[in-house]
Length: 157
Image (cartoon, rainbow, N blue to C red; front, side, top):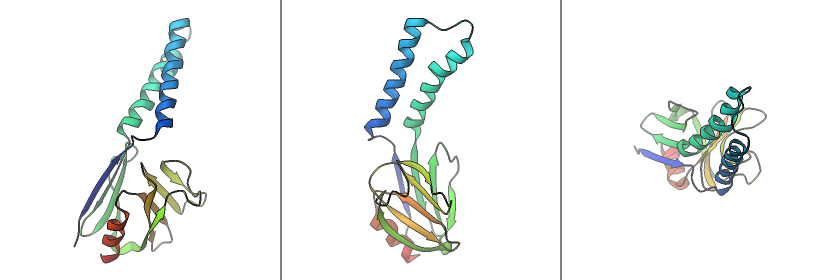
C-alpha cells in the first residue's frame, strides 16, 4: 500500500500576472485621474478595488492538492474546493499519462469541463498529467509533476 501527497501552487504563468498588473494599473490610473465618483461610489469601489484584489488573491491562493491513501484518491482545487473530492480506488478503471492539452480537450490551466461533462480537468502547472477513467464512464485529468508515480500507485491499488 502506497501513500502519495502532492501539492502545486499557481505561480509560473506570466500572462495571468500581466493581466492582474494591467487591471491594477487601469484601476489606479482611473482613480488617480477621476477619483471615486460620489454618485456611483459603490460601483467604483467594487470594480476598481475589490475586483482586482479578488483576482490577485485567487492567483496567490490557487493550488491543487492530491492525496492517495489505502481507500481513496483525493484531490482539492483550492479555493474552489474547500474539502477534498474523494474517489474510491475500486472505482478507478484505468490511469494513463497524458500531455496536457495535446488534443485541446480543455483550454488553459485551472478547472476545465468538456461539453459532455464526462471529462474534467484540474491543473495548475506543467504539461503532463494523468487521465483517470472511472467505472461510470467519466474521466478526470489531474495535472501532476509525478505522473509515473501516480499511475503506478493507482494501477497497483
